[in-house]
Structures are given as C-alpha cells and as structure tokens.
Length: 425
Length: 149
Image (cartoon, rainbow over the protein chains, first blue to last red):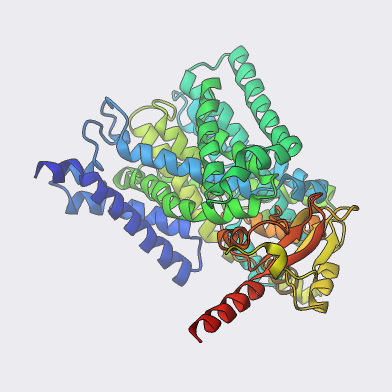
C-alpha cells in the first residue's frame, strides 16, 4: 500500500491530462473553439473547489495533487517545498514557449511593414493602462505588482480563433488578415517582454527605479544577444550543436534541451524561465532545421501544454468568483473595448485601412488566450505577487474569465463586419 | 558486400536559386516528375538548402486554398506561410551524401528525415545528382529474386 500512496501523483497526472484532452477535444470538435478553452474549463470543473472536491473530498493526496508536503497555492498555506504539480506545470510552460519561439520567424513581420507594428503597439498600451488602473481602483491597498500583472494579462492577443474565422471566410490572405497576424505575433512578444520585467520585479520584491532599469536592461540584453546569435551564427549552431545528432534523429530533442538549459540560465539574471525558453526558441527559428525542430517538439508540447492550462483552471476558486464577478466583468468589457479602440485607430489612420477593415482588425485582436493565461499563471506562482488571500484568488479568477470570454465573444462580434464587407463589394 | 551511392544514383536533380519565386519552383518540379526534391543552390551550384514536396504542398495549401493546418496558438504558421514568396522562405536545412558514401548512409538519412530522395554532392558540396528510394528498392528486389532462383 505504501508504494501506491507514494506514486498516487501519477494517477493525478493522468486524470488531469485526460480531463484536459476531453475538454479540448469537445470544444474543438463541437464548439469550434480553441482547445485551450476546453482545457481551462475542464480544469475548473475538476478543481478541488468544484467537482474534484466532491468526488475526492476524502482523499487528500488526489485533492492536493500528490503533494507530499506542499499544499494548494491559493489556500495560502505555507509551502514547505515545491509542489510536484507546479513543477510539471512549469516544465510544460517552458516547453510551450520554446515551441512558440521556434515557430516565430522575425523575418516574417519585418517584411510586412509598419502597420502591424503600430496596431500591435496601440493594442498593447490601451488594455495595459485599463488593466492597471481598474485593478488599482478596486484594490488600492494591493501590491503594485498585482496592478501591473493585471495590465499585462490584458496585453497579448491569441488569434487562433480569428485565424479560423478568417480562413472559413476565405479572408486570411487579405490586408486585414495579415495585419492581424503580424500584430498578434508582435504583441505576444511585447507581452512576454512585459512579463519578464514585472515577474522579476515581483520575485525580487523591489520596485525601485534603479532596480527596474537594471532588469529592463538585462532583459533586453538577453533578448538581443540570443536573437543576434540566432541570426548571425545559425550556421555554427547547426554545424556544431545540431548536426552531430542528426543521424540518430534526436536533433530536435537536443535543441529543446538547449532551450530548457537557457530557460534556467536566464533566471541567474533575475528573468523568468519562460522568457528564456521563448528567446531560445527564437534563436533556433533562424536555423534551417527549424521545420524539423517544430515537427518533432510539437508533439511534446501537445502532450504537456494541456496540463498547464488545465492546472490553471483547477486553481480558479469558483465560489469566490461570485464576489469577483464585478471586477471580472469590468475587465472583460475594458479588455474588449481597449483592444478594439487601440487597434482600430492605428489601422484606420496610420495604416490607411478602410473603416470596415480596421474594425475587422480591432475585433479580430480581442481574444486573449495563452499568453494572458501564462502571465496569470506566472503571477500565481510568485508568492505575494497578486496580493494575499482572497485578492489573489479573485484577480486570478478574473484573469481566467477574461481569456475565456474574450475568446468566446469574438466570432459573434466579427461576423457582422464580414457581412458588411461582402455587401459592399 | 556494400554498395556505394554512385552505383545507384541518378544524375538528374531539380535545382533552383534561393531568390526564385515559389511558383517557379513548382513549375520546375512538375516539368520532370522523376525527381520531387528541389535542391536550392548558390551561384556556384553548391547546395544550401532543399525544398521537400511537403513544404510545397503547404505553400499551395495556404496560398491557393487559404487554409492552415495548425491555426491555433497565435497563427504563427499562417503568418509564415502567407509571407513566404521565395524559395529561401520555405527551404529547410540540406542533407546530402557523397558518391563514395555507402548506400546505408543514404537509407539512414531517408528514414531519419522522412524523405525518399537525398541529394548527392561532390567534395565541394556541388550538386551532381540524387539517390532515391526507387533506385535502392529496385536493386534490392532484383537481388532477392535472383538469390531464390
């Protein structure tokens, strides 16, 4: 019996992954929504605050997800050492961002000119300001990192759903389509840069100007250095690092291992590991082996990333969400309005898109998904970053609600503009 | 008894420069269907990349049919394919064998990278032809039946 209890985390691991896959499959197949939403909702359902608490109420190990000595993050209990599920979820998010990095080709949006960049910047400033000030208004006593984190949650766009709609309408290959794609990829990058700065502020607990300047500088130095290595020396990376492993077919795994190592190394400079993983991915994106790395590491990501999102969902305290409903609602409205206005203005007046096209761009940028969730997940793992007690749970729940609802409402918001566009032409 | 690559290779290959547009690449492949793998070469005919049928098919998928296989997680693939016009945008890192290499090495490369053709280059990395799976299996089958008789 002893051994069964010790390894019960394997059961918890399997249950989470199975729930995530079922949720993901359901939303993708029947609701035509991104799998990440299903994974999130599956997590909310099986969480100890909901169904999981009822079924496994008497089984502390399943409920605590195999922590032998730790405890659930949000209950505020003291954590004597790292939670095993947190460790798995950290590894999952590092791999997720590494693959995302490899898939990002910096050359792609350099070619597309400035409209996408302007739209991205506009779509970052407004939502960030909204998130920051609203959170500050609601929780004036909270730590300033909580306000910043909530701003950062609203920044990054996840346009998976928009791409799907554009594709169905045969509009992907239009000016609005490529502008959305470029802007979304750029604001992911901006979102991760902001995350790296805020996360390092929160984990070192220092908000002095000098410290902020220092980590911002280090952050940019790391980005720049790794990007340059990728662009200038990709031939040597291929030759020295990747070529020896080609015969055995493990070349992509070696690339991933380098990414994981870099994810750790950047923590020495007070940066968050997900930033290192992403930039390491960008470095490999310049290599000719890019396609093979994506092809072979994506299955690993598809295996582990649902765990991350489902585990995030599990940490949403549903009963507590009733009291946080107001701030969640306001954040959803502001996240939507902020993106539409922030993206419409540059697209319409600086990018010279037509009124209708600019609205498609604005609305298409509304969904917040993976990166917003990653920001929220990172914030949750840094003790005190989202405030203490109920405040952290409420803000985290609100962040999850923002990603869920902004993604769900986008198709309905987007369709009228396509109808108008076809009516005109 | 080990066979060398030069015994089974063919001296045909489709070569393009990295500045050629994707539709020109497609035209060149379709002209002669004996080889499907495109070798991307520099001015001195040195191999710098290759374009597999899979990459051409993906480019056609998004360019002609407006579809992308993995639209989720931010549509990076969509952006990449939509902005790809030239051979260099879709080419991948080259693999190759030399005429004096053993056939086993070509088979390893094919199995390892899911290809059915491998470019053959000389000692200066210039493309001289290719070895494909038809050459390899036709030879093995012939040998097998001869042994039985």
